Length: 152
Image 1 (cartoon, helix red, strand yellow):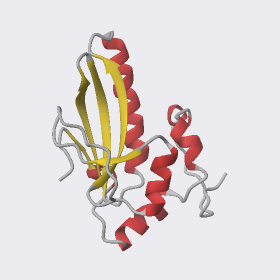
Image 2: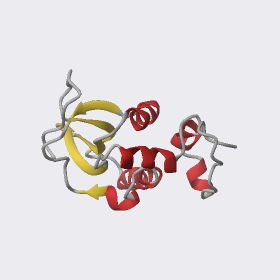
Image 3: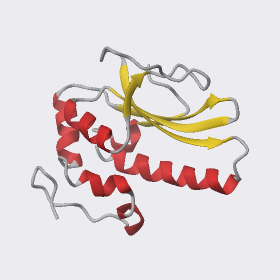
């Protein structure tokens, strides 16, 4: 199987191939090509992973991807990310925005604060898978994935 750009799919662990993002990604340009587009555009694309209080009794693991280009944005949109303003902290998520300036691509995985801890651990495992495939699209790979910090 190949990506849209014609490069062959890389072998991945079987658990990763079950992730819905993997199945959608084959319709897009390969990770190496997208990382090269980012390098040539001189963008400092980063992913920020945090936990936020969404409402009383609800929290979410949140991934925000900053400084993207159209090709990466199309891929993120296809796997459930949406354009939002940058989050400020754990209690201030990004708001809906009209302009592109200062936007990030954001994905939330919600859970009730009284959720069984095993469910939260399962969400953490999902976040690990998500950041693993996402990191492969970033020029600095996993070094560009930051935990417990927010987009500047």
